[in-house]
Image 1 (cartoon, one colour):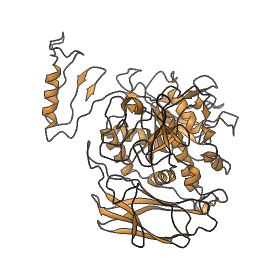
Image 2 (cartoon, rainbow, N blue to C red):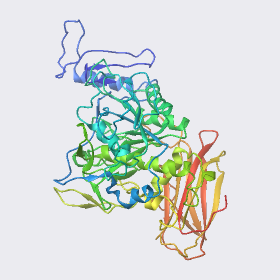
Image 3 (spheres, helix red, strand yellow):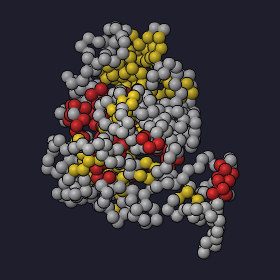
Image 4 (tube, rainbow, N blue to C red):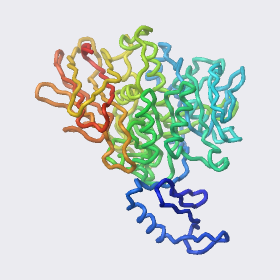
Length: 550
């Protein structure tokens, strides 16, 4: 790994291969006062070529610092509060679904804890490395930091936190509330984690660090993690160690969901600028409104051909908490879209854990804890197709469903969650923690259209699952191949807009728009091949249909 801070090349844990040599920026060969010989660029390239050919080396990555990736406001606009989702969040808030009983964890630049969005008249939680949890606190119940400066001077983490759970103390039901204003927060402050340098910020650099961070949130009851940062550098759309580590954690921890910003290099770097491409995580793009994607939002696909980013959320000109006592500031970027989606995920978890499913009204007897891949399936199933990429400098350009710009579209709770008397869909039905154990085995359900009294224009079926982690820099990254299809007579529908079985994505969606009342469809999930003894999965069906037999 090449560390930009000390300009060193470090290779570890690969047998007898090891080198650490100082380099200056001009790559001139010389000996420094410590007796360490610098190397030329050609020497470095030759060395990298030699070690990459070793069977002991799975991949090479630079240990570049991370970027908290908000950008300048998109245009000179006043800014919108997160509740400008309007009906998309309001229809759940009106029913009392506001994040009660839920906790999110963020990894970010810290949070200004005495801002009125997070303040607590009974005192603030300890900010240290103890990992202590105080659930009696109004808003922030855990604050891990290795830094002596936890003021969040630039305000990035404070703004992010406000989008997810912000609520002004003693001012509930304000239009300035976050997406899940009754939820609480665990903070993982990423400053001061390296070499005691308060400005040095890095992502967790191995599985142990990823596990430590996410396990820490779990002790606070946080099963949704929001990360609004990306590694700096170009052409990072390959399956990296961090992608693999997060995939591994989710493979082992099915109740969790990890949401990351896709990056803001779409306009500067173009296609393949997306930074997070793990199979099990959600990589979020930035929507301007319910029609447009922000031109700066990073684009896919992943180097493996997988659809990335996964889905968009509103992230342009978002007004949220600042670092003054009780102010708001406007920021834009996928850094704002990711926490908006995290707030949505908290509301979805609450919906199931309070028993709103399947009747669309609260019934404690129906409550259950959803898997992370069911929550992900609900999100991916809900996506509303965006029509264009908004570029003020060059004018709008087209974007289509499942492309490298919008993925599965714009998250839409009104299209994703059934509420009695509120939803266009006739019903929603989910199948969670289903399992296939043998290659060639299949799961099937028969779906009958019932369009009487249904206002939805389509029925939507989505499969999602947490796959076994692949090797770094894989080109075919899916390990356990589950494939979704829907059949009507001799007509077979395939997911993600394709005309045949797909072999890249764990998130698979089929939408059926042309049907008649009484039409019958067979929904099938087939285990084409398995690298493990079994594979669990979730299926979500929404639209105009009668109950599917369990």
